Length: 110
Image 1: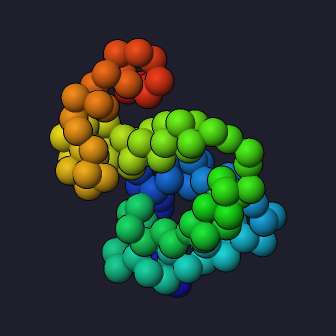
Image 2 (image 1 turned 180 degrees about the vertical axis):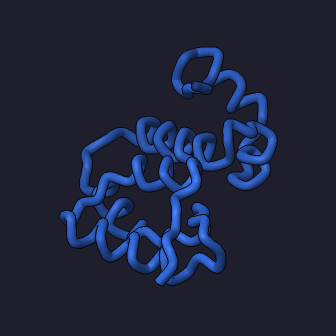
């Protein structure tokens, strides 16, 4: 098999995932992404992560509804490169609500 390289975005996707399993899970994810990539560059869309485990981990934490809301909104802001208008549309939330939460420091734009 030809050598493949991770794009910076794909690398970032792997770094942001907590890997609740172990090194074998990481190995499996990378092997699958190598197979899924058409060319010699692995893109984020070639990486399949077990998001069900992440959701289960999130739901097992005891948090207030407001804390859950902040985590969900922050996740979408991160996922869509801080595009407030897109996140507002996708989640059916007012853009002014997102801007207010950013201004109050509840959501991060870094």
